[in-house]
Image (cartoon, rainbow, N blue to C red; front, side, top):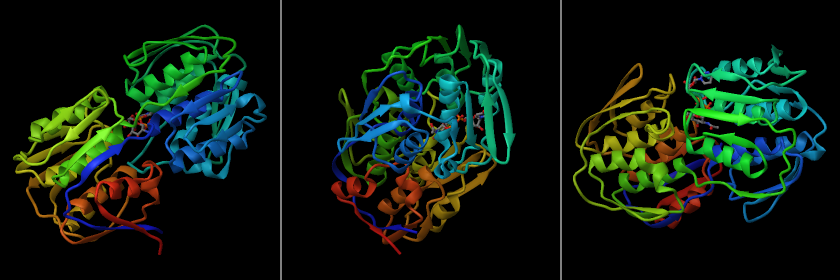
Length: 419
Ligand code: UD1
């Protein structure tokens, strides 16, 4: 397993440009499987999850042509099977959007039960509830989920929990269903709006994405034939902002949407970190007192759970006692033991972590437990005195394009090492 070796305690300096949003791309690619014509998607991040998903789309017969500039031409008219059971589909969670896409396209789908990062149980009951309400029968056998609908009809669906995945999956399925679908208590994340914008550009009729009520008027044909550019990655941008702050650096993070960063910029300002902001950039400035803060993760526009581990690293370096409450995932503090090996003073109980700071972080050998926890370990290594080795980093590369290259360009002493 590859690892990153980091010699820390160097403030990051310079500029970094943010890639296309992973979570938007992972919704848009399956959504493209609905089309009755070709499309071009631009600004896709070059990360393992996207490349695996494109490979799965090829395996069901879609024509997929990737270009070096991060764009891809997709023509799904050649899809010849409803069985998306490529071996790699087990490893990525977003393959489950092919449930909605294939159900919408051919009224049936067979997939492996979804994989992805381990934050405790990750049920898909809200997806299934919605598909059933629209007329599908759903069965689970031998680790596979089978969906079939003679008729897929629009319905009024109230989600019991605010779920990004269920919102996107049901929105995709509803685009070519008969009649009107209303999803209530929908998630409002920027990537949901981006998937809806993509679908509308291609000929769908989706209204209300970004609010908690989304209305989809089904269309019989989705012509496609257009080009669509994926939004910048809110979580990648936040990770670099936090890396700059944790190292006391001076970094301009370019090609982001400042509005999407508000939950983080508000919290960083509360901590005492000076920020400057332009139309599509945010600069994190060094200096200033850093005070403890309480953070609660919530669905958007609340503080994103996918920035929780990276934020915890910064809180370790702040003066006083911070409280981090994880409200989205039941088990997202597994990385805390590794952080403690680096000198962090954190105690966890159930959904809350109490962080006492400031501490001096020191290098250690730690593991990337999941994508964002792995990124947090890298941030801790960048801030720590001495050498840190972050093991099993492939999981980080599922979600960060050219992580090592971008950090090195900011002056970090980080190297990727194969065993
Ligand atoms: C997506 C993101 C992930 C992020 C999460 C929350 C992708 C590929 N992944 O994951 O990075 O951490 O949103 O912002 O976009 N739940 C149910 N039943 C369901 C579905 C979800 O109870 O059918 C619960 C989950 O257990 C969790 C909460 O709802 O507690 C949120 O999950 P959800 O928003 O669905 O997350 P994902 O779409 O899997």
